[in-house]
Image (cartoon, rainbow, N blue to C red):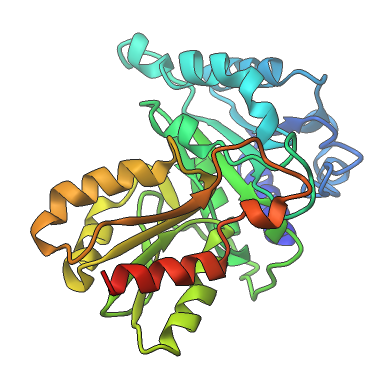
Length: 320
């Protein structure tokens, strides 16, 4: 996945001379995870460079560049550190076009940021804050599940005419290996993907949790339970139509995400699907999520909504 992201960034910089990549340590060092390795040497210090350690400054700088027609690709080193930039992202980036009556925009902004746990990073390097931004009109929120998606969705995000926050599941950076085309390609934003057909229950997730629900579905299959699996991919705007179509077929829905249960995006999905599919539901919509606690370093395994928890929830939902 790291190589796929690096390749996407290289293509974005090469195909549009207005593209600029910046963030903490992204230059010669190549980023803390090496996602930008070699890009400064290839494109020069004017187009790939380090910033001071100020996330609000990075976001404000990105807004300024984009408002002048540049394509700003800004890295927030960890998603946990995006919070100091919320003022710029929520009050400026998201509302720039709206408050100017479509006279001006910062649609050329893409914020890349690694999110999630699984690397023993503790509570300052493991959070999943995607739900904070899904309520903000004017932003798109995108999460890839594998290397192929990472390249196609990132290129689509960078070229989208709206500001995008691109959450990268860091525990998959080196763990996810796949064949990825060398050429330039995009994956459409706002469209979920039905990964596996099934008849008994719909499983929905995004990012690194896709592997978890696939493993849980394999466990369920051994018990004769047929799971339909959907990767949401884009959380804002999210593809309610694809999810509702699946739930009307299976009659059941389980949503898995790593972020805490309370206020997590699963709640929004549940409310919408309940409205759309009420007469088709055979059981309550299930949510398997992180705990309502700070991310606990020594209890990381207990915190994670893993395959076993998901499998138990599948059985409970089907047998309701």
